[in-house]
Structures are given as C-alpha cells and as structure tokens.
Image (cartoon, rainbow, N blue to C red; front, side, top):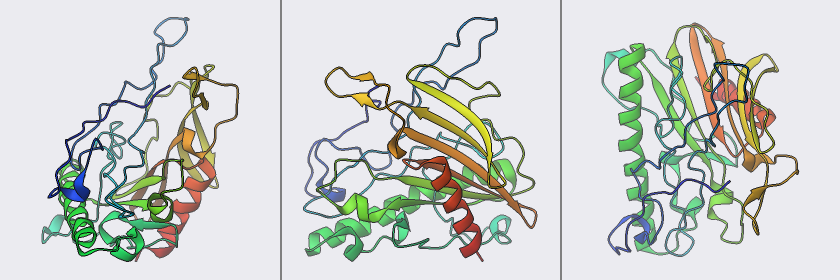
Length: 277
C-alpha cells in the first residue's frame, strides 16, 4: 500500500533545507480513514492509515525532518496528536506538568533539540537550516499543545525522532518518529480505531496490554515494490503505528509511534517515565 501524497514545494535556497519536492515543514499530509467496524456481520470497510514517517533529506547531510502530522492520536479523545513538542509557555495551565527530556538515548532526540552535529550539518548554511527547523518544530508543536490544553485544561507534549537513522543518507528505511503527550487524569480507553480488532490480508489492528501498558497497534504487511501489493511477510518495525499509555501520579503519559514495534514502543514509554522529572 503506497504512502499518502504529501504536499511539496519547489526548491527555494532560502527555505528550510532548500526543500526540493520534499514534505513542506508545517503542512499536514492527507491521512486515509482508519479501519472501521461493520454495522452488520459483513467484512469491515477499511482503508490504510499511515502517518508521515518519510525520510526527507536536507542539503548535504543536514538532518531536516518534518514534524509528525497533527491528527494522529488525541489523548483521551479518540482523535489524535502527531506534530508535538514541549510547550514552553507562561500559561499557568501547563505549570504543574513535568518537562519532557531533550534526549531519551543515543537514538531518539526531541526534534526541537537536534543539534547541527547530530544532523550532519557541515556548512553555516546547513547549520542555519537546522536552527530554522528547530524553530518551525517549536511553532507547530506549541500549536498542537494549545489544542490539547484546550481539551484537557493543560498539556505537555514533545516529538522525538531517530536522529542517527535520519542523518544516514545510505539508509533506505524511513526513520522512526514518535510523539509523547502528558495530560492530567486517568489513562482511559486506548482505541484510536474503535473497539473492533481488524485482521485482513494486508493490514490489521490489535488491542493489547504490554508490560502493564494498554496499547493499540495498527500494522500493514510489507509491500512488494514491483507490484505495490502486500506480501505474506511478517510486519517489520516500519510497518507499525502504535499508541501506548501509562498513568503516574495523576497524569497520563501517551506515546504514539511510527516505525517502532509494539515492544519498542513500550520500551520508550518506560524510558520517558524514567527520565521525566
């Protein structure tokens, strides 16, 4: 199943990373509808639901990755939050929430905290591009945080990406990304696709508990590039979108990943809990 078309812009040497036919920072790719349950005992009508986990390249080896699309998973509301970031604000509504860390490990770094060295930037132009990328991510993520805050009273959110994979021009696989959101209250339901599990030849959804965390998984089969059709191969990390949730000290921590297995998703949720103050 091919990924959805992403808005693109012509090459502009003054733009972020001189994007040429690459996703435009701040724009949202169209998302097909999620799998739905039948109203009668017939096969479910489904459509692929894939997030923006592409591998855009900046000038040279500069790491410039578009924030995840807003509209993935909205905590506790059954909709979604994708492009997210630590909301830096004087708003007292967010004052009591913890600050999410800049770095979780050597692999995943907050998009706003990516350094020129981590991006592979070697020129002053590239370094300026990384700085503009950080600023664009902050603006987009602050907006997403405001949406969540309006629904939940307060919200802290931040997006992370696999910096090593994204900076490696030799890799064909798309780099993994995820968003972490913190809101007050209990964890509630985790059913972004509804309560019905879907199991079809090329895709499916699954509800599960992994290491004490409630998770919802959407998966697709690997696609044969020659026919663009699903194969019988087992899903790999790049075929998953996973949401998992934890509750601690009256707060809900939600992680939404694209490009990580369910087990990896739970690992990073635990790492967030460990490193968040």
